[in-house]
Length: 303
Image: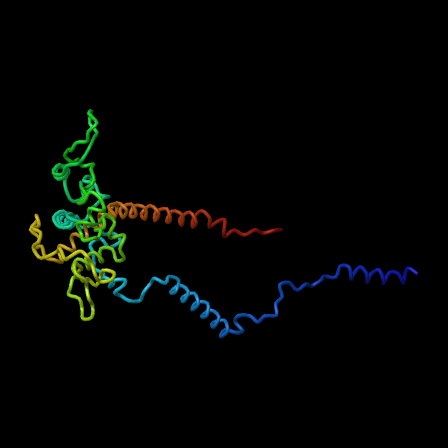
């Protein structure tokens, strides 16, 4: 009897401990490498659909260069390099161009007189220039407003008291503030330079209404501002020849500084950070090589 039970018990124990094999995450779909053409076609379709959706997402975009303005050419500015700083002599000349030509219509609301100290002018020169302008202040002990000479802490004066007066003095057009103009226009200082030197007669088939001027770099081609820079329109203090291109270059450099006055300090801080981080990286490699190598190369032997 026990001889008949023993084989049966042995078989049941073997079946109980018999390992089971389960197929998980099985798929009947072919692998990507088995159908490369189909995979490439699907990828191309997705990329193409995404590109078309991006192109037609904004119905106001136009492929006509006259609507968006001609793309300005790039110029090798002295401050465009990763370690380059502003040409401060050009900033001083550019401020002179702004003061004698541009300030008649355009404001510079975000720049105070003190911002010029140590950049293009000395403190004495800035105080003298600020005192030439009168600012409204008050009220005094009688509750009345009064006029006083400017101080270095004052912001540069506006050519018009309000927006309505600015439009009335420019045939309905509002001259933009130039504080951030190189950041607000595609092309930055390249755009400003191209706009100031790009005035020309309208080509055949293009009509410009009375009071407007043709400039291909301005969106639409018709701009209310007339050409203002001509040879020798400004007499530089340092004797630099005041050609049209030189005037445009200097005022573009000045406006680039006005939009980013921390440019030089930012690059100086970046250089310091690069040196410090490079030293820390080398120190980390040394620690990795000489401190961790015994631990990473050790062998554990069990006896």
